Length: 256
Length: 256
Image (cartoon, rainbow over all chains, first blue to last red; front, top):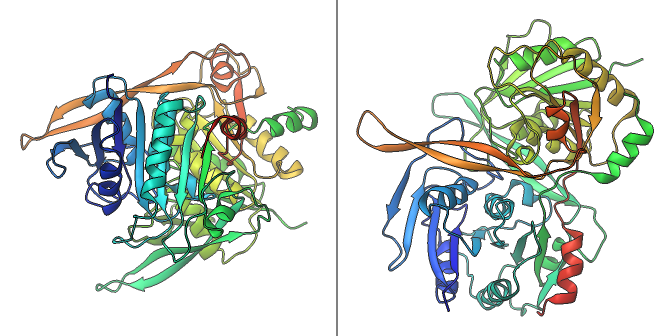
C-alpha cells in the first residue's frame, strides 16, 4: 500500500523543539514533507502574506526528510506546500505543531498553529493542530506523544468530517497521569490584555502585549475544562463564520 | 443624550482613502476615536503582536478627531484602544474599513478588517467591517456612503445579536444602481493560489502570492451572489469555531 503523504508545519518556527517531536512521532506513519516558518509566528492566526514578498529555501535540518523553511506565516506554508512545492500533489493529512503553549478557547483565532490546520481544511485536507499547554521552549512533550500517535492513526484510518480541522491541546506534564481524550466544544472565554510600557535605549516608548484568559464558562464540555481536569482536549473546528441564528433574528427585526 | 463612542480602525493603514471616507460618513453620529495601523495590514486576519513590541503615537491627520497610529495589526488596534488608550471606557460601536477590496466568502478569515471587527465582538462590543469590492487605492466610495450611514444608524439603534460582527461588502461602482442590502451567509468558496517567482537585484528568488477565488457554491443566499447581483452583502459573523455536527459524528464513530 502507498504511504500517506503527511505535510507538517508549525508556528514556532522550523528550529523549535515541538516540530522535532512531531516529526519523530509520526515519521513511520507516512511520507513526510515539512514546510515551516523560518522565524516564530505565534499569534499570527490565519494571516497570509500579500503585501510583502515570500522567500522559501530547502532546509537540511531533518535527516532523510524533505524540509523547507519559508519567510511567511503558517497559513502561507500550507498554501506554498500544496500549490507550489508539491505542485498540486494530493496531501493526505496536514499536522501543525506541536505548539509551545495553549491554544484552547478563543486562542484558536489567534493561533498560527490552528491557522495552518484550518487553511488545510479549507483546501479539503484533513488537518490537526497539536499544542502543549506549556510555553517553555524546552518543555517536556513525552507524556503527550502516545496520544498524538493514536490520534494521527485514527484520522489516517477514518478521515475527518468534511470541512473540519482538529484543535488538540495537551496538558503540561505533571505528577498526575493524563486521564484520556475528550471531544469538546470551544470554551466561551476571552483574553483581557495589559500593555507593559517600557522605554527603549533611545528614550522612546514601546509596549509588550500581555494578557489573561478570563473564563466565565461554567460548562464541563469545553476545552479549558478538559485541560484543567488533565484530559487531552480535541475540538473539531469549522470555518463558516456565518451566525445563522443572527440571520434569522435580523430578518425578523431589521428594516432595510 | 450622550453621544455614542465609536472606535474606528482599518487594515489598509491610517493614511488610506477608505478610513477617511468612513470617518466623514459617521462623524456626526457619535464621538469618534480612531486607532489604526501605521502601515498596510491586508491579509493579517486575526493576527496579534506577541513576539514583537508595539509602538503607538498620536496622529494629527484628522481635524478635531482624536487619532492614534499603531505599529501592530487591526486586532491589536482594538485591544490597545479598549484596554490602554480608552482605559476601559465603554465603546458603543467599532467600525473597521472601508477596506479597499472584497472580503466576501472565505476571505473573512484572512481579512484584517474583519479581524478587528471580530475582536470587538469577542469583547462584547457591536462591530461592523465595511469593504468595497475594488482594490484601487483611489477607488470611488460615493455610491456606498448612504448605505453605510443607514447600517451604522440601524446598529446604533438596535444593537446586534450577542457575539456578532457584521461583514458588509459593497459592489464596486458601476452604471447600475445598487439594488439594496441582503443579509447573507458566507459563500462556500476558496482561494487557489499561484506563486509568482521573481529574482531580486542580488540574484535571489522571491515570490508574490496571487490567487483566484474558486466558487462552486450554487446558492443565491450568500455574499458572492449578492455582490455579483449588485446588492450590498451583510453577513453576521460569530467566533465559535466548534463544529457541533462533527462532535456528534465523532462521539458515535471514534474510539479513544
